[in-house]
Image (cartoon, rainbow, N blue to C red; front, top):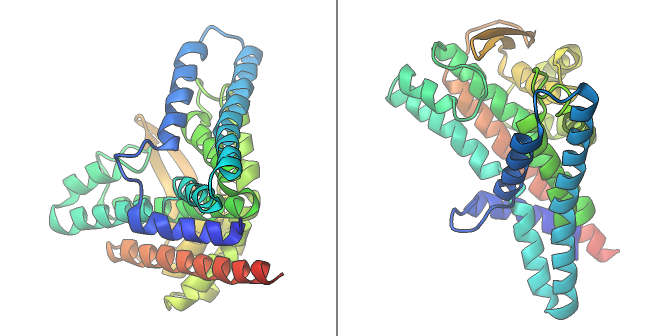
Amino acid sequence: MNLLFGAGLALFVDRMIGDPRFIPHPVVLIGKYITLFDRRLNRAVASRNVKRALGIFLTLTTVLIASIIPWLFLFLLRRYTPVWLAWTINVFLISTTIAWKGLVKAGWVVLHRLQTEGIEVARREVSMIVGRDTEHLSEAEVVRATVETLAENIVDAIVSPVFYACIGGAPLALFYRAANTLDSMVGYKNERYVDFGWCSARLDDVLNFIPARLTIGLVWIATWMTKNNAREAIRIMQRDACKHPSPNSGIPESIVAGALGVQLGGVNFYGGIESRRATMGDPSRTLQASDIRRTILIVHITCIVILVMAGLGGVLVWQL
């Protein structure tokens, strides 16, 4: 199998069909396993060391199950069925780890609600894609939450799964998606998860380290092609990316902040508790609804650049 072609085609498949509801989604199954384990074994009475050990066990079993089962399935398909069938299943499984269509759709829905149905409806809509409290967000804060989510997920939902698919096909892409799902569900620093989710959060940081840095070039190209401020994007990234609590998420968020000429980050509330995060970008103007559209365009062009690179890389590998 040509892994580069497969990864590129999977990205295209996701853009075309997304995640059909009539097909069981691997990430949903992974999430159910994590939830069951969390409810049964993450007990408040357990000691710190016990909770950390249980969290390590959860992390290892989740990523191994998520990758070994598809590897075995594809191995059997390659051995006993036509090659094209195994290759098709591989591409489809990779596409389930990518969220190009779902990501931009979420952004478009918030933008539509904000422009046509008002701030109250937009607040409810944005609450579907962020973890912060949204009941009292202003229009600029709704836009900020949406832009931050779109920017951060360029790495988590697009570049990283495609990167790992290029290396190891569907099994490695699903390994990554399982780790990322773990981080999104238990990788918090609150009392319940600071120990239980420690391993999950660290693994996600490690797996996203290289893709996040590859994203610099990809998003810079998209920024230049969309006639945003490419020079400012790099300047803000160099200055502000390290301020983000995540070693990876600050990279795409700061690039987008610089490209749009806005400031991201600041004060959020989680369960009524204030959380102050370092700002990225300069507050040269107030965030506007049109910034969601501009960020979506950057996401689209970034994905198209990846498609072209995967296609060219696939041709090169084929010739070799």
